[in-house]
Length: 140
Image (cartoon, rainbow, N blue to C red; front, side, top):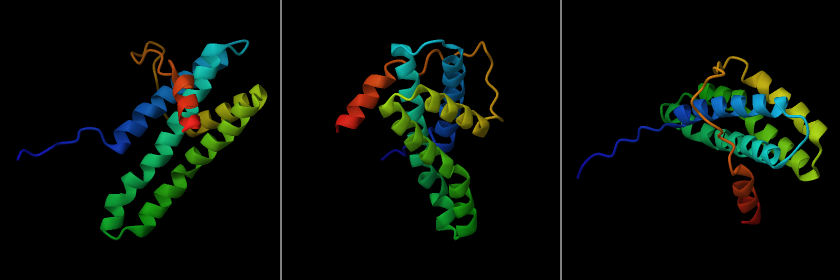
């Protein structure tokens, strides 16, 4: 048998999602009125934050195997906001409270203040069709 090498780690995925969230929120803040693109953007941020939150346990599993419980708990507390913010955004999104959504997105940006993304990035529009995926997840 050959060895399977996994090149995608939760840390790399978290970094990519963080950059995509920053790009999405920047674009969201430049828009005037909500439209179908806006719903895609908010849905993408909700799904990305949930995915980040879900990946934290995978990240700390190695530390817990070695008995670094304090380090693992500290890391979980450091990223706990992602799951909380995802739920907060989801509630505001279901109510279509755009003021609360904008406020929550600004709060989210404060957590990503150390992430630098060029205006000429090559990530495209990561939020494309996210609303459809979001609705599919809600219907499950």
